[in-house]
Image 1 (cartoon, rainbow, N blue to C red):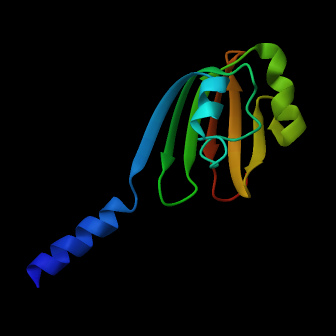
Image 2: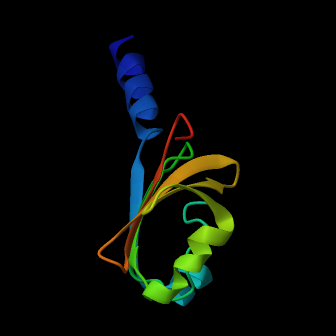
Length: 116
């Protein structure tokens, strides 16, 4: 009985693991397939570099941080709704995410639960 409980706890705790990846460029991330799986939004600027991505394996929770060419902010403007001058709410495969731009060329995209 104790062994069965330990196995059940191990299985349940394993279901909420995070995975993380780093990529030098958008092209490298795209080629890895991570964008197509929804763990990185398709709308991120093609000039993205120094990409750090973390996602929850079993649910749609993501956190993506990267730098990009400041002229490519249009990628957010086309795909997202602006909430504040540097904050956008976007759709990532039907899951809301918030994109926050800082330092002109730095973005952090994270999952949100209430869509704001």
